[in-house]
Amino acid sequence: MKQSTFGRIITLGTACAVITTCFGVAPANAVTDAPSSQDSAAPTPDAVLSEIRTDLLASGATADVAAFDQLNEDQRQELASYFLDPAVASAVTANSTEQALGPMTVRTSGDFKWGEGAMGAAEPDTGAGASRAASRSSWGTQWFSFAGIRLTETKVSMSYEYSGTTARKMLGYSCTVVRNIQPFTQVTTSKSSGYISGGQATAKCKVVVKRGVPTPWGTIAWSTYSAIQRLSAKGNGAVTYNRWE
Image (cartoon, rainbow, N blue to C red; front, side, top):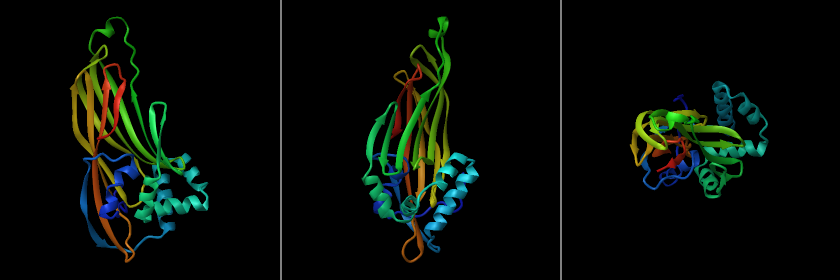
């Protein structure tokens, strides 16, 4: 994942909103590190928008580049302000509303959206397959977008043996940053734990967000925030849990 130019601040008070503003509702036990500072010139809104477009191009997201180019001036200003002003980011989160859309839960605040998606691989059980162990995979994502442009997405994937509707053995799991197109924001993910319990398979990934904003005097301060992204599924592939904890 690209490391350069990602990162900037939120004050310690706003740091508690980082996972929320990137992905969704922050868990109560998420960890925030105290900020440090380093000298750097404060970027302009045009520079922020230019970086977003450049990163979208580099990611090969042609549809998102086209959507970005169609943003009106108010939308462009709102998007840039979100990354440059912690008060704007906090207000966006505070004004969000939640709605269930089929299997997904989506939170919306104007053009900003946070959502989740999950799926268990369809592998029909026929005949003896219903009683013998077989393998299956499931995955879950958490994402953040603006005006339909996907900016950040993290993914937990796992594979396991099952018999009927019961998960029997964890075969493996992975943690992935699918996309991170947020200026001044670094997102990393790593394995936390994977196990079978109560007939369900569970995989947990630690997601770390390092973010900041420029101060009025041109200093950049950094804040780090982390949380656990958890995915659980039954042996039949039905996802029972896909959220932060």
